[in-house]
Length: 108
Image: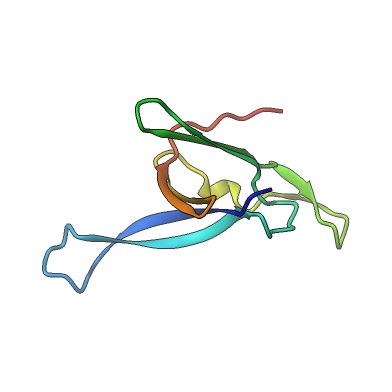
C-alpha cells in the first residue's frame, strides 16, 4: 500500500484578525493512514482523478469494531466527525488533496 493519510478538519474564526469573517482551519483528527493499526481506522482508500480535473475519494470505516486488547465491541469514535461538508485532507502518493465530504452512504 502506498503512503497515505486521511484527516478531518474544521474552520474556526480568527479572533486576532480585524476581519471577523476570516477563518482559520484546524485538524480534528487523523482517521486513517498507512501506518495506523487501530480497528477503528478508515480502510480501503481510493482516489479517482476525474476527466474534468476534480477528484473523488472514497473509503470504508466500520460502525462497530472489536477492541483487540479488551475484546469488547465498540462504536467507532470517528463516526461523529464524518459529516456532510466536513473538510478532508488526504495525503496520497506524496500529494495533498483538499476535499469536502459531499455524501455518506451507510451499508450493513
